[in-house]
Length: 326
Image 1 (cartoon, rainbow, N blue to C red):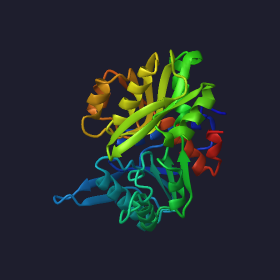
Image 2: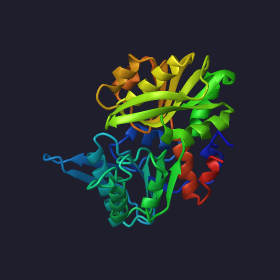
Image 3: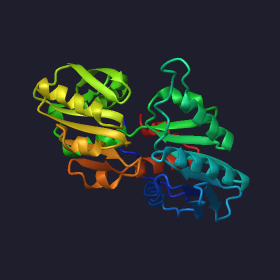
Image 4: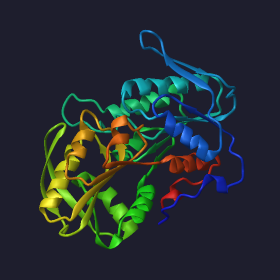
């Protein structure tokens, strides 16, 4: 399996795209633009006094292939509205094709009905993005694979695994590693990454008593004396990771690290991680890192612009995106 996405600059054909960004994660958009060697399209995305979103595209985009980079992270509703209005503005400006690049897809955890009279909010968000006028969606490590099926337009779900594998190989001795899923739902993700580095896997069996709280009951697999790396897509409160780390150490693990794609990190999550038994946590910058993340001693940010940039380049050139991962 390939683990190093090729550099978009290796293909000498110039990219004829327009790259637009909202306020969801502008530093990532600028890093993607730098990787692709294309300028950011001039645009304004601001608020009126009553917090209404106002958007203006300040360049001609008629007939252009436009990519909007916008993570719908906190404040989720504001960033989602920015994305929808940016799509509408570009549609009304006669853009040829509009791709919503969502490194973090907000509302992804609401992908099914957990009980009676509850919504499937991620399906609603998919409908809104389509209705606004997007032609394609490009996202990263969706919380649930079935969300791709919520769209009736082409949707590419990228995987952060190649970037994580490269970092793990650089920083750890592979012979004593064990890849761990913090819950049963993440087993496929952990197994896929473990296969890339030839490591065994373990699973933390978790029982969730109520939303936002979790309790690890036992560890499935041999972790005694091993350096354990927890793999997950989203860390919010940090409770699941901390409980999993404690369970692994109780079962004899030498030390516990964590690799996550999306650092939601609500409330005092960063502080809880810092004071936990997790030796280090690595996050991608799919969500713009907060000051707390950047100053935390045991939290590190892994740049994802190269992977997303290559996917954008391949989409523009009508080349395979899936071949980045297989």
